[in-house]
Length: 351
Image (cartoon, rainbow, N blue to C red; front, side, top):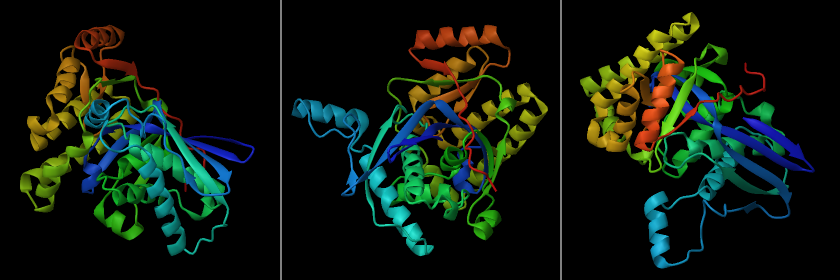
C-alpha cells in the first residue's frame, strides 16, 4: 500500500492481489498464501472539503454516452457498477465501526476520488483495492489508525463489499492491507476467538520469478463461487474434502518456499487448479480461463488462477528458456503476459 500527502491532500494506493496457493479456501476456514501485485493498483485521493463529496471516475463511472447502443455495449462489457458505490460503502462501514468501538471522529468534511489500472473482472481483486485505499485515507484523515487494529482492517474492508452484494473471502483484503507476501490461516476456532485469522508476513525474496496472464475479455469472477458455496454449506463430503486439500496446499507451499523447493511449488500450483476444476467443473470455470491454463501447461509451466478466474499466475521451473516459450505461446493465443512485480510490505508495525 503506497502513500503520499501534501497541502492537506491524502493519497493511498493498494495493489492487486495474486492468490499463489490455497484459494478459494479462505472463504471456507482454510489457508492461503498470497502476494500483492505492484503491476496493478488502485489509488484513492482524499481532500478536505466544505461538503462530503464522492467523485465519480470519468471512465469507470460513466454517465454520458454517445448513443443508446453505446450505453448497452458498455453495460454488456463492464456491468453496471463503477467505484462510487465502493467509496460510499467504505464511508458507511468506517463510520459504523468507529461508532461501535467508541472512536470519536472530528466533524470536518472531505472529497474522495479514485483511479485504478486493475483490469476489470480479471480476478485480481480490483474492488477491494479501492476500498482498502479509501480506508487508509480515512484512517489518516481522522487520525485514528492506531485505534483500528491492522488485523481487523481486512474484515472491515470485506464488510463494505458485502454491504453492496460482493461475496468473497478475506484473503484479498489481508494481503492488500499487509502488502508483500502473506501466509494466512482462517481456522474456524482462530476466527471465532480472535475475530480474525492468523496472518504471517513472509520474506518476498523467497518467491521465484512468476508471471501473470490475462485476456482482453476476462470472465466475471463474481459468479464462480456460487454452486460450491451452497454445497459446502450443505455439508457435501466431496466439496469439504477437496477444500481441505486446497487449504493444505498453502501450508505445504509455505514450507516449499522456505526450503527453496521450486519443483514442489510448481507441483502444488498445478494441484491447486486441478482441485478447483474438480469442484467447480469446466462450465463454471469458463472456456477462456481453461485455455490460459492449457496454454501455460503446453510448455510445462505450472499455472493456476490468481483468484476466481479471469487471470492466472504461471511459474516456469525450468528457467529462462521455458519463459521464452511461454511468452511465445501467449502471444500466439492473444494472451497478455507480464512478470509479476511483488508489492512492498506495508510499513506500519505489524503486531
